[in-house]
Image 1 (cartoon, rainbow, N blue to C red):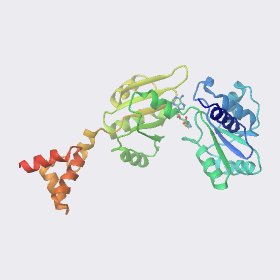
Image 2: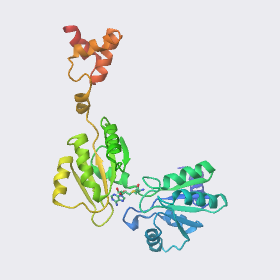
Image 3: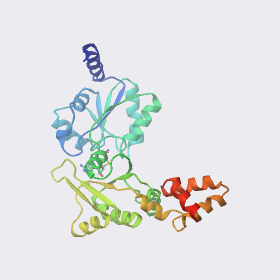
Length: 297
Ligand code: SAM
């Protein structure tokens, strides 16, 4: 152990913990359980000049739970353009601001994204005070592969945009994360089933709250389940990605024999060797396997 290095590390953390002027703090807040607020979040919220909140009444409850009194202004979807400019002006004037949203990590599927972009354009410092994010919490508890994933957030509501978003995901092999509101859950489960077939899905509901529930099932199982009950609370849907078998069944060469597959690449101007290599790559097998089959013929 090197004591000088340790002291240095502690000092630099302390420096990071000084709330600075002219800075926007993106403060992660609980996704339901108020006890999940971090010590650093409380410190920053109590030290900044003002708090910008998506819903000042909702966030007022959080601040009073933490014993913090602070001037608050609203910053939400329908005032974000005018209000974003106003907040940036105050930051440029030397004040500090903490941005909090209704729940979780600001800027993830909420208007926080726009003010971060604006501050970056205007050269205002933006600091992160991490907290829970519903997407990551749900992924972790889903029981589905977590090493590679993509975040879709809310699917578009319009039929055409939704269809386009779903068809873009068809060949995606990574685990897919969606946010959904309870009154739209059934339609979304139907649309997912229609687009992807009977994939595995974990429905993560009311995480960290009294009625926390994780249902690990399939799309048809989920549709059955919600035929009997009304969806309630907030949901994150974690759906498995396409399997290799599924991708293979949709590939242009799915109905070709191995030799036809190789011949196809030859007809595209490739050498026999490159054609064997390409077919092996498509099928996810060793080149020697294709070579043996083609040469035996
Ligand atoms: N920025 C937040 C985050 O990433 O944690 C999400 C904001 S988004 C407007 C709200 C959506 O997050 C909800 O509709 C729901 O899909 C998800 N969500 C938030 N809290 C949740 C909870 N406790 N359990 C399950 N899903 C939740």
